[in-house]
Every structure is written in C-alpha cells, then in structure tokens.
Length: 248
Image: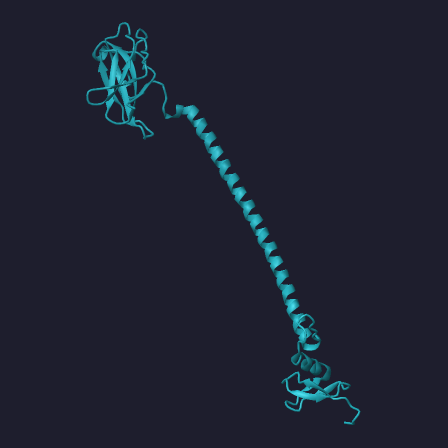
C-alpha cells in the first residue's frame, strides 16, 4: 500500500477480529479466519464495539450495517406480535359474542318451555279441578245404590279447628235433612306436605256433625250424603260437595 492510503481499524464480520482496512476498498479478507467481508460493514462493527460515551445527554451511535439490521428485525417482530395480539383479541371477542348469543337463545328456549308447560298444567287443572275437586266422591261402595230425589243433598260447612283432649280436632257440621234416618260420611286426609290424599274411609252417623282429629299437621276433607231405610231398601241422597279443614 502507498503512503497516501488511509488505513482505518475494522472488525471482521465473521470472527470479530480487529483488522486494518482501506476504507476506499469494497471488500477485504480477514487474516485470522480467512473470511471475505464488506469493508464498510467491518468498519461499522468496529465503531459500534469501540464507541465511547462522552456526554450522557448526547450519545450518537452509527446504527448502520448489522446493528441496524438487528434493530429492524426486532422492530418487525414487535409489529408482528402486536398484530397477532390484535387478531387474537378480535377472534376472542367474536367467540364471546357467539357464546353470549347462544346463552340467550338457550335461555329463551328454556323460558318458552316453562311457559308452555305452565299453560298445559293450567289447562289440565281447569279440566280436572287440580286433583282437589269439590264434586261428590265416587267409590265402588256406591255402585248400584239407589239415589232418592226425596232426600236433599247435605250442605256441609268447612271444618273448624279446635283443641281436643288428646289431639287437635276439626269439627264439621251440616243441616238436618228431612226424612233422613242417618248420614254416611266420606273422609280422607293427608299430611300437609303431601300432594295427594290418602285412602278414604267411610263412617255412618245419626248426628249432623263429624269430628276429625290428629296430633300433627294434617288436612282433612269430607263429603256427606243422607240415607233412609236399611238393607236392600236403603236409598241415598247425592253426595255433598267437599268441605275442607286442617289441624293447623
């Protein structure tokens, strides 16, 4: 090299060794590892590695060459990461919207089913009287028996709760029926938490009153019919409507 050639230090882009190069040249060869390199990049590497900070508020680093490439790569990765996060949030928001829509659809179907079931139950209740009808009882014991139009149907008052000697009593009464020899009483009952009444029982009396009783919370209902005569000649009135009463 001539005396007029300016020699500057550089760092090999492969092994990092310090070499002296002619900045006017385009390429050089590292004497350490034999790798061919671009002189401009090698000079930039050296300047970055040996940069000194003279003033903390005035730092100038030549961000060309490989350093700039690294920072550009990092910047691109950050942009891609932000784009991916935005896309993920968009997809998640759409999933949330779909789940919310599905939830309200399911709730609508459920409420529609409950409403329809309620309507059906109401219609059934109206037709059947809700299982607590006030019509006369029907039993096999009344089959083939003679109903006399001369005997009026008793009208029974709802039961009155009162204290008895060893239980709570429910007192029922009705007006005397003209021409009757006595009365047949149909009684059934249930515990207050039960839905259905239990198996009914039948009683006969010449009184115009009937007393039911229990030591716990029970519901009672009775129906009464008048009768006249004995044996095969006995005739009956129609059963009365149910009268209700309870021990609580």
